[in-house]
Length: 98
Image (cartoon, rainbow, N blue to C red; front, side):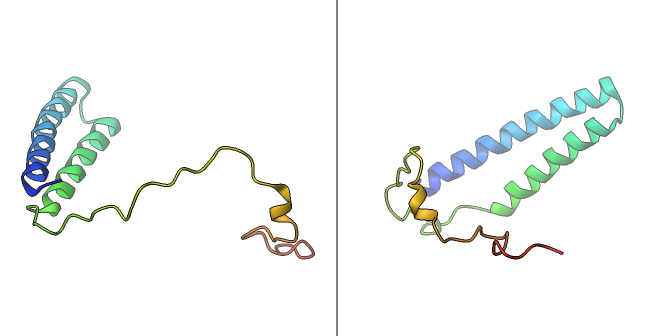
């Protein structure tokens, strides 16, 4: 993604947030200062802060992918692969948690 494209995306998110802030303000007028409305307002504010923290895109700052994605099959693993293995985080079979 180019810096211009990133800037366009950032601007689009900022515009959407402005619309969302307005919609949440409308909910506040309708529902009052309820927990749900406060949480929505807080979430929108947090997203705005995160967007502001990104700053302006800089050339070379974008991280390209390391390579093509690897597809992991949905077929079950061979049960023999697990023979003799311990369950990670559960400890050895001859011991138990206190």
